[in-house]
Amino acid sequence: MTNRDDALRNTTWFTSSHSNDQGGQCVQAARITGAMAIRDSKNPHGPAFIFTTPAWTHFINALTQN
Image (cartoon, rainbow, N blue to C red; front, side, top):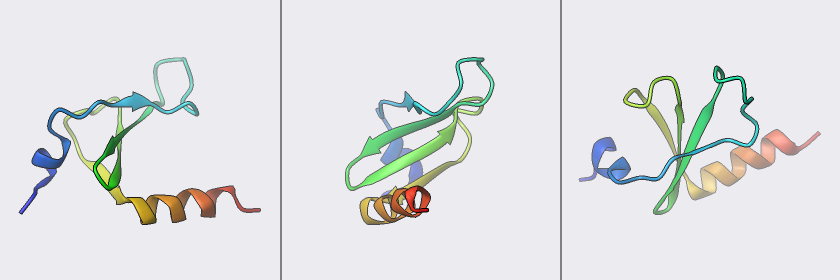
């Protein structure tokens, strides 16, 4: 079984292009095998949301539809 720590070990995080450059409200993401992980940059050792690739695609599509 894979737990959160195993899934995110040696993960390369990047800051969302939609985060501001004022140093406060940053969302970080990481591509992991078959999924996308999201976390708060102010709490890098805290919780992370992990979306499967289909769930992430559905989430992004839902956000971009008007």
